[in-house]
Image (tube, rainbow, N blue to C red):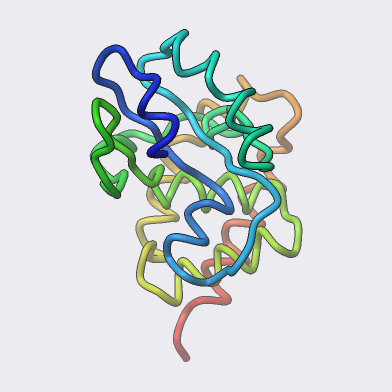
Length: 164
């Protein structure tokens, strides 16, 4: 982030998601890539990414949960501030949006990440259900998503997290 911020010519926000947030929060010790978004898009930063990928030998993907599931209301306010690097404010992308996109994908590592978010109190099962219900009417905009299967997956995760 420090290296990338040196290329910023105007203030902006960088949102980290996926494995990067798992590293920051401490439930993983490594990740295969760094998923991020820049708001607003800045050509100087976008042009710096390929160079930094090579120099630092990391893979960087421009990807956030709203690429895969509808944007959650209030995601920006729930995104957690990490650090200010020069003109670049770095945030962890809303954990609820991350959790829902991971539930929708359904890979074992993704579901382990959601369990870690629940265990650490980064998301609650109740709010996860409320936010899923809020985006459910917009799922038609994502034709690859089976809305019924997604609902069942959310319910399975939130049921599994309930204390007995």
